Amino acid sequence: MAEDYTKKEGFDVNRKMKSADKLKIYATALIASGLSFTAGAQLTSSGYGFLDIPVSSHVHALGGVNSAIIDNDIMLVDQNPALLGPEIGTQAAVSYMHYIGSGNFGGARFGMPAGERGAWAAGIRYLNYGAFDGYMPDGTATGSFTPADIVFEGSYSHDITDRLRGGINYRMIYSNYEQYNAFAMAVDLGINYYNEEKDLSFSAVLTNMGGQIKRFDSEYNRLPFDFRLGYMQTIGSSPFQISINAWHLTRWKLPYYSHDKNDTEKRQEIKSGFFSDLFRHLVFGLQYSPSKRFYLGVGYNYKTRTDMSAYQRNFLSGFTLGGGIRVRSFGFGVSYAMPHKSASTLMLNLNWIIREF
Image 1 (tube, rainbow, N blue to C red):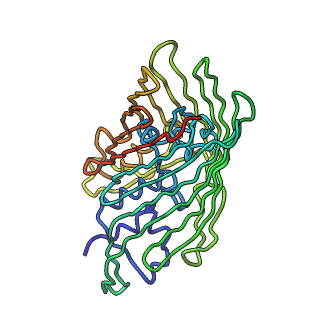
Image 2: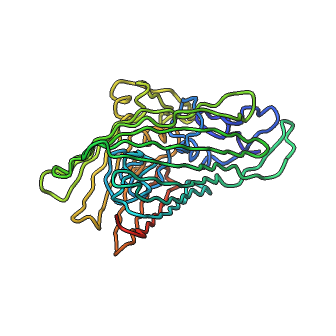
C-alpha cells in the first residue's frame, strides 16, 4: 500500500479533512508535493491555499504574485480589485492551467465600466485536483473520488483621484472532498496608485478576509488572510519593467522543511532565518514590453523554491516565464513553471475586448 502522503504537513486536502478517523486518502508523492505547492506554504495552519493560484498567465509569468501590474486584462482583478477600471471596456476572459500532476484549474470573468470612474466584474474559477483512492481505517477501499473547489466572485472599483483607485472583491467558496463539503465567504480590499507619466504603479491589498459558513467537520479552517504590497515600474526609458511584490506580511517567520541531499534516510528538518524569511516574503519579476501589445516576462519566487526543497526540486524551481500578445481586440497569454523535476504547470489566457471604453 502506498505511503499516506496526506499526513504531510502542508497538504491542503488533509488539513480540510482531519476527520480522517473515517477516511484516509492515499496519493503519489507527486500529487502531495503539488498540492503542498498549491497551498502556498508549508508549516501553515490555514486552508484554502488554492485561492493564491493566479488566474492570469501574465501574473503567473512574473512569479505568481503581482498586485501592481498594469495591463488591459480583466483577469488581474483576483490580485487586486483596484486593478479593475473603466479603461478595460466591456471585456470577457477565460484561463486554463494544467496543474501539477493531474490537476486542472480554470477561470472565466466578465466586466464593464460603471460610469466614468468605476467598473464591475463577475467571475468563476474551478480547481479539480484529479482522482484519489479512498480507504477506510481498516484498509477497505471506498472507491475513487475527485476533490474540487469552486469560487464565485464579484468585483467593483472606483477612481478616488486621477491616480488613485480603490476596489473590492467578494467571493463565495464551495469545496467538495468526497462526502465532505464546506462553504466560505471572503472579501479583498485594495488600492492602486498609478503614475502614467513615470509608468509607476504601487499597490496595497488585504486579501481573503472572511471565514467558513459551513465547516467540513467540527474543526474550523481559516482562510489565508494576507496583507500584500506591490511595486512595478519601467526602468528609465527602456522597454523593461521591474516588479517587486511582498506577501504573507501578516507574519514574519516563514519556516520550511528541508533535507540534506547526502542523508540516505531523507530526514526532514525545519529551517528558518532572517534572510530566508525576508526573501520568502518577496517575489521578483522582470518584463520586456516594447509596446502595449506585446510582453515577455520572467519571475522568481524564492518561497516556491524553498517549499520544494523537501521534495525533488530542479534548477527551475521558483522560476516562471511567459509572454503575451494582443491582436486587434483579442489578447493571448501563456506562462510556464516547473517547481518539481517531474511536474510542471502551463497556463493559457485569452481575453476579448467586446467594446472599448
